[in-house]
Image (cartoon, rainbow, N blue to C red; front, side, top):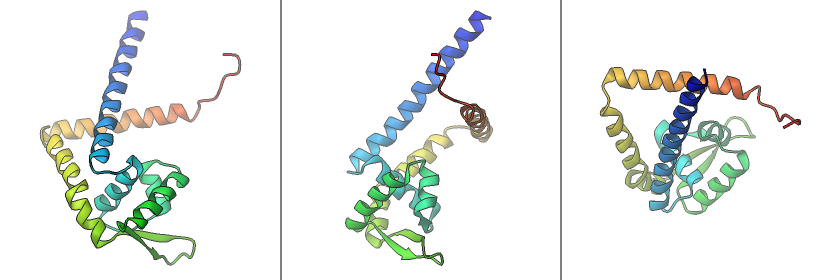
Length: 155
């Protein structure tokens, strides 16, 4: 039993290293393009969905707090990469890339997306499906466990 726990510990350690290595790859890309991570992911999301998004939708897609996203959006707007457009709901505004933002994303974000696609194409279709299915299953299991996480005052 103890050996099983040790193997799970080692696999968890390896998994976390891989996740952090992936995060670092995106961080380095953002840095090369002169973008903070949040701004990188905002432009990525706008480019990836090929549509307009609200600030709330962006927060949900990139898993960042509203205040962090709002600060990044203001900076991207000042730099001319995005613009806001009124939505039917007065409280929401649509965010879209400007022509400058589209040109910038073609030189930056599109290249990252192409590299992601190249990496995925290195896997067979069965491997791609298995990878996505297992990663989704792991994330769902972890998420359901995290909902029960509380600070134990006796520790």
